[in-house]
Image 1 (cartoon, rainbow, N blue to C red):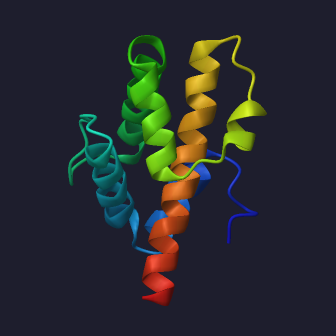
Image 2: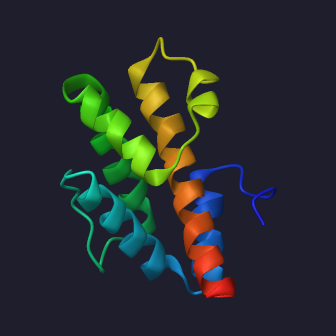
Length: 117
């Protein structure tokens, strides 16, 4: 399932192909809400907007609300090992890489819920 997901575009395309893009948005909103973080996503959010919105939200969290950022990663269930493997010297690049990990994990949640619930 996840071996072919090498980019945010792959995740979005796969979710659309399985008609689960809307569920992916719902899962993202749900986990951000649990972390008490506002994110500007709605049912009309287009895939290109999703990448930009998520990247910007993570960038701001890393810069301004680092403890909330860590809490979000915990809620979404991003492993600490995966985060430690990323290069943190460029925050813009880091937030883009974390956005991919977030979407990949959220996609797994949506996919498993659809296939095993």
